[in-house]
Image (cartoon, rainbow, N blue to C red):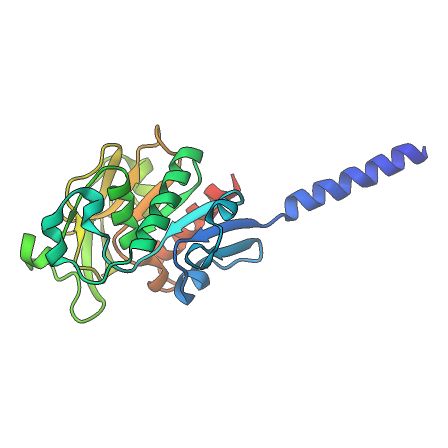
Length: 247
């Protein structure tokens, strides 16, 4: 009888510990906005840029987010002509984010790329970038103007599964207003990446990796973490990401 009681209590203890175990999200480079967007009692957040041992933190990764920031070195996608169009670059960050992307892809770790992060997703998988949108495709859409601007995007993907990864999408709701702060964007789209939404100048604004390659890998050119907690895209992306991590 005592044996059964000990076994039962041990089982309850282990079961409880398992369900209370926190998940770990790795941010390629953390800031307050990203942390506040993802913060949760059951989530640990690690800043990869400040880590001295990237291999160790990857071993505990349940989710990966590549955040916004500097231009990506165009030599990563073999376009030296774009060097003269680039602004600030960070070689160390390029290296870190390429490794984070590769690890996510290989191990099917839920992934979001935001702004620069979406660009890195495309570059790391074999795509290219426009070095400077205004000088290469024009100013029909203003993607930045001394800071953040707002503009409309249109869901351009007929696959509802992919569209719903990013947007609370229905056939009646295909136009969304998002924030924007970038001068580079996706040019040649890597194989396996599906464009979900575009701005009116044709620039990709949201993408998803083919689910035959990765079960949850999405990228957005805008900043959901700065849209505010009351915004439906902010809430929808966060909810889908945390659900993917928990499963």
